[in-house]
Length: 440
Image (cartoon, rainbow, N blue to C red):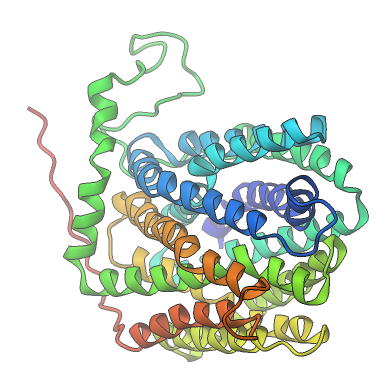
């Protein structure tokens, strides 16, 4: 319990950061349509633009996320967490300052660049911090609580978006992002898993000089380059454990479907049922409430009664049903009713991260979480290339046959593959292989 209490400031930082991030999501579809295709409910250009941004972000995150995760194993979670949280302020401040065409495109470009650093990295570092502070038997519950805190931020953020105007929401989100960084820097204690002569923070809070009395020196380029072997580390992690490899494959296909739905469903609902910002916010609020209930109440109970591999399969099966029924939605109430399935689909990510965490030692948690997040970023690249053209085609007048949700249905194939792969996972007992490093 004392170890769990040590995570309070991380949970507060996660809540504020999630509040800021999710607050603007309901407005993004509306402002994109406003500046790219004004006075239209369907716009292929907006779908392609969203897909292009997602692919570029995924490509950058694929490289950056494992690197930052690896560096956090050496220099500390708090130090590296400062980077993505600070970067996320920039695009919000741009759109909060002024809403014109030029500022919209500046926002889109900066959001693309900053998301390369912040998307996935923030979550993987928070998970690594939790893994540092909890024992293995507490970890799945702690991961669930962290995801639950994000869900609460999701609910509060989208509820705020429901109340605030589009112009105001970006200003409030920028302020909350600054608050998250300030709180984290002041209150969160550093966590470095292997504190020895080979490990020192990049930014020490008491840094005042280069000698031993005043504080450690800033690392040299040679020291920093140790963290840049992350691609090899990813390959090594995947090949060293069958269970880790299976979890990584399931994570890829789950993210492929998840990212496809995130990028496409809003445009599908806008074209099919003329949804606007407020209706998107309503869906997200229901989503968040269901997710929070599941992660805080249902997951701890189910984790004691059902093996986590089976819970993973249940969550993926619920995802398949959700995608299938969304693709054939016959009335405006169907997307609302399907939010109830979030109770099960929300379990997938924390279980995958917990399985990955159980396969590595305490000094490799950042590397493992960064690896899974990097694989998810690969899905971020592939998803828009596969699904955006399909979504745009079947929502247009040139569709080969009358089935607007056919592109959504195709996304379900990714979840189906992930479900099939999840049935083969058998979690091995935890084996920590200590790597001996010799200082010459």
